[in-house]
Length: 327
Picture 1: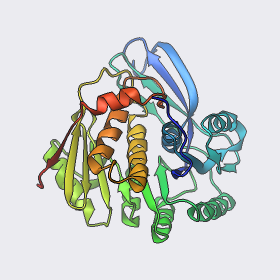
Picture 2: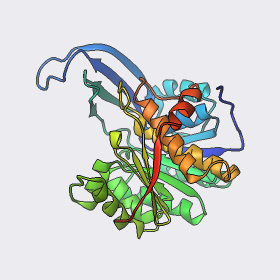
Picture 3: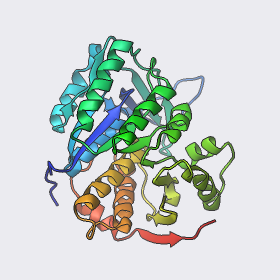
Picture 4: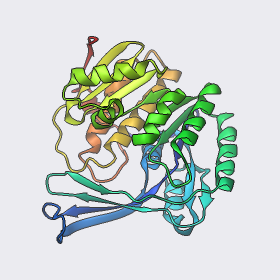
């Protein structure tokens, strides 16, 4: 099934700390303190928001991308934005965008080596804030995803989320550590922690689905409309208006988990964009099953993106969706 661009479904993705991802597939396991051999590798523009933008554009959304981009090595990003027909509103800053290393061993386990990113000065911050104000005049959905570069504090990031919230915008926020903790208090519309990130947020180990539910309920009082918890092979849980839905995909042949979480965010965003235009044909169950199918298929491939919806739709029929009770 071919995918057509639908210009009325507009979304902004914000990547404050993009990266060029150097992904190496190891011939065996990672040998810490010794030599590890790589059988194949790729170098491509990434960062969580950039990955979300690519998937959303593939699905047919009208995507505008923004954030901070190093001027010294921007060309791969410019080429990608042109390729996916995204409107480029990134703020250029001095220096080079970081290169992150992802090492995938023979069991498909990924070891990430993430670098700190560019330094963002006050002039770039002001330019970004002006851009955000302009985009808020024409867009309702904003996906802010990824880590923070030097010069951007968790509090400043939270201020931007709150500002968009005050303008009535729906902010999908996917980050971790201090940035996520600060952003939770700024009324994001949707968050998508995985079980490890949720555990870190509440400060205790979460060993069961019930533990994850209890932890999510502690965040509900912050005024977050949608709390989505991704649990790898255990599926996805979604808390909305006090009600839980759980999606369980079939077992997948994992090639790489890189970008699966970003694909889930893109799928949830696309589902809600469609729900706004056609709520009768995009009920909550369909939004969740579509996003889960998209993410489950992402682990079977190398690289982020979707070129054909047929396998997504086929897998969607095999995903078990059920309402689960409160804990």
